[in-house]
Image 1: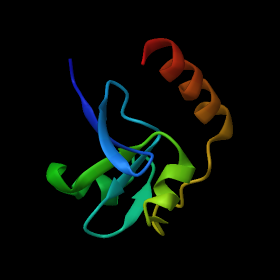
Image 2: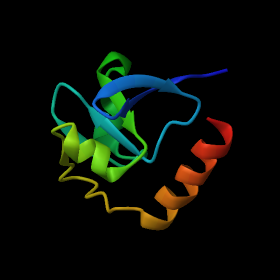
Image 3: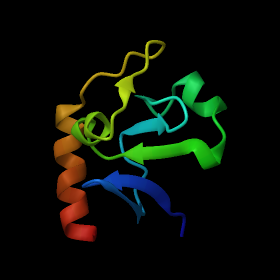
Length: 86
């Protein structure tokens, strides 16, 4: 099963779910999973965030290209999924 590097509570953990946002650690930005900037980044420099708040707390700023928006409804659904499936 595929695992994703997720920033959670100040540390990197592995998860079965990629999260709703993707970040580029070398650039300090995060955006949508479909952002062209993020897809061009090397895998070793990518990190995922389940929640907007985690990306901001990790010191990331929103991407100026894709301009990600906070996905409140989707975050709520993911939070429920994480509680049930770990």
